[in-house]
Image (cartoon, rainbow, N blue to C red; front, side, top):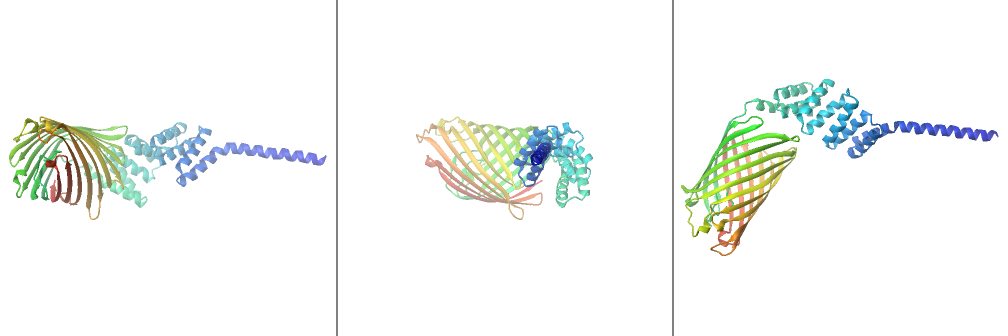
Length: 474
């Protein structure tokens, strides 16, 4: 009998212990999830940590700490909109929460909303005046807003705190940029370039044209002078406007029939803004070009150009371009009216830039379509251009640029002389090295190889160009 009573008592005690364990586990389970998630965050396992933080928030929907860690995990995964949503939930649950203001300021900064970033970082500075990172990013937010005096004040305060050397170095680097920005921006820019070139197959193809009219099959040396100037009569935010002028002059040692003089003048206007936090620039240009060939009138061009530049991410930029152009050729030796090159040209395309290595290097690629509707049927065509390029700094301030282009043209009509439709394919490779010497001088070396294939032999050629240039600018 006594044994039975003892057994029953033991079972009752064991049941009570198990029941109490279940109660403790149920109440502490969200805390256990948070603890495990924090450990996983420390190991860089952000997605697993995020799942634990979400489960903790589901079990305790009124716990601001759970949503705070949800926001931190989203921030580490660079999903800043989701992080902002979680942090704002923390503020609703606990309006006096100090650490979430700093987290919100950082999330808004990296989501490119500098206005809201500045608001929360100012509040975070009051909550924690000894945090140098608050001052650093408050200064950066002010810089992106163009509030340079406030940016300088925040960055100087960061430096005076004597935080880690890395933070001080960053603050000093950004502070050094501000005096330049505080100066009134120059309205006038000028540059002049002198170049000495060797061309092993001189052709007639002025800059901006896509088809050679004549191929000499002869080599020659030439000197080239290029002058460029721009006056910006409107350069505030958000509007911009200005005038550009350039003069190009080539002089060959023997083949003077290929000497080209080109005058170009342009009027432009544009607008800078932000769309969903990303900056963009929309610009429209009108340009007139007047070209002489061996001092005789050769070509007039009127162009309307529309460009849209926008940044989709800190490492990715895109440029969209449309150009409509009216070309009128003069003094043509026309065998038939079908040989008249005067035309309307339409060109549209895009170029994308991918930046890496802290934006010191980039690759780019592009595609353009263009079409000539010419007066003479022999010159109507549709063309496609694809390009790829790479830029990197080397050593001692030298920069390397590589570019490759493939352009194919299909002509619309049967050629009246050769009695078949013309098809051209062209590969062009560019390699250049350049280096600045101070603010006002640049030296460059350039190599170009062209391989132009055509089903009409008269338009086939290979070409190599080497040149050295010196550029001065103010």
